[in-house]
Amino acid sequence: MSDAAADPSAIVSTVALTQRFGSTVAIDALDVCMRPGITGLVGANGAGKTTLLSALLGLRPPTSGSATVLGLDPRSQGAALRAKVGFAPERDVLPDEMRAVDFVRHLAQVRGLPRSEARTRSSDSLWLVGLGEERTRTLGTMSTGQRQRVKLAQAIASDPELVLLDEPTSGLDPTQRSEMLTLIGEISSEYSVSVVLSSHLLEEVERVCDHIVALDAGHLVADGPIEELIGDGDGITLELVDIAEPAGTVDVVESTLRLGGIEVERVGTTLRLGGSDPDELSDRVRDAVADAGARIRRLEARRRTLADLFEVSAV
Ligand code: ATP
Image (tube, rainbow, N blue to C red):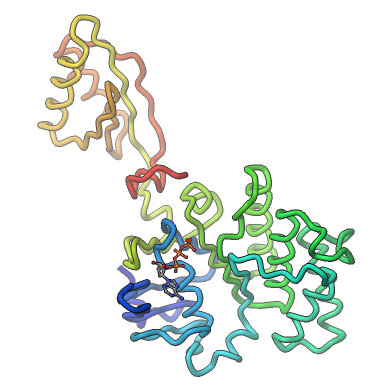
């Protein structure tokens, strides 16, 4: 776990941050540390992602604990902080009658940009998200995908150092999701903007993020660089066929491997084995299979994923 308070490279840190709503503990004594780059804030629905983002923006005072965002305290320096931090909420909050370019300009001005600069930047940011041609359309005439892009455009229009994006792919089809993630990645790297992207989809986070903060029912369950959390990613998936007595032989192989200290996860006749040296693991598997008189149908190395780490399947 990160020592959030002591890390000078942190762009966001929290110490024992807690938010209660009546008897619900939405976030519980969170110590998190986010560094420059793209951080995936991941967790199932209700895990506390939106509550954490709100606390980081200073939109609601926490029940206890503290947060620091870009060196500022959201409770006492909320206005200064919101001038440096862009935000796109999960909810669809776009006013239907307003033109996209006016909406983005208005919010850029609210965040402190002079009128003429806000006008230029609103136009630029709409071009950047691929809505240049559409910028004078009213928001009510736009598709879900276009509206998500408008939310992204307003988040980046005031030239922030950090943007907080709450479920930016919500409501999008797989192609649109992929395009949105690519766009977020490009904006972050080309403009050196750090991003905190909340999502309940592990594969999304894995694809675009450098770090993750994972929440479960308000508790922190993981915090760190994705590569470090997944490890060097080696593992073997083994599928066996035992002609004579399928279940029995798989049992024998499974227990031999377990007794040999190998991590084994079993799904039907498939054994998923954890290990950092695929060649060594493969040899031991072949020996165990031969001793049991079984036959291997498929033996393949596969990279570990965040879904393996959390033992949940991505939705
Ligand atoms: P989702 O992806 O569904 O938005 P989330 O991870 O963002 O989920 P939160 O919206 O932060 O989760 O909610 C965390 C918990 O706090 C939930 O149990 C939710 O019902 C509760 N909660 C959030 N806001 C409030 C509120 N204003 N009043 C009462 N309970 C709330």
